[in-house]
Image (tube, rainbow, N blue to C red):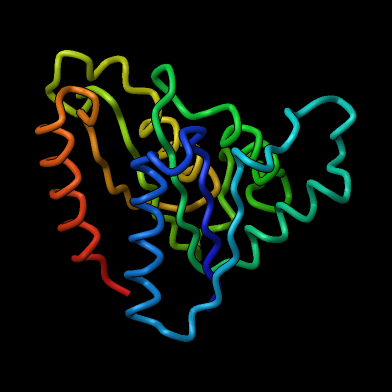
Length: 187
């Protein structure tokens, strides 16, 4: 089995989402020692933003798409920046949403073609944006990713750490809860 590990946080070693993805990959490796892991850091090696010159996809974009398509499991670090995904992660998404490859249009509407993948998304948020919170309506990261992956036929799993900038105590408790969620992940 092949796993694609993506990080998109610009905060480097202090990143909660990077810790989360590393822990998720370690958990899955522990459950399946023969797992092949490919790693891509979208912050240190960013993809260019999609332009007209990228249509149809050039070879570099095809390589990104092929890397995604060849993975059985994809683990994505997705910190919330300004209420949504980072521009680095959005540039990657633009290269995997390709008509005829990951989805197709029909008379009944779009049909996803990547449904056999397992996608685990590690979300980190500085504040509280979950259901029932006063800022829930400003949450456009998890909802966006749920829609994007659903569009290509995948039901993503989310591991969420939120409120990490509320206080040091809240950060510690949120990370501890996330650690328990990661430890419960199945193979």
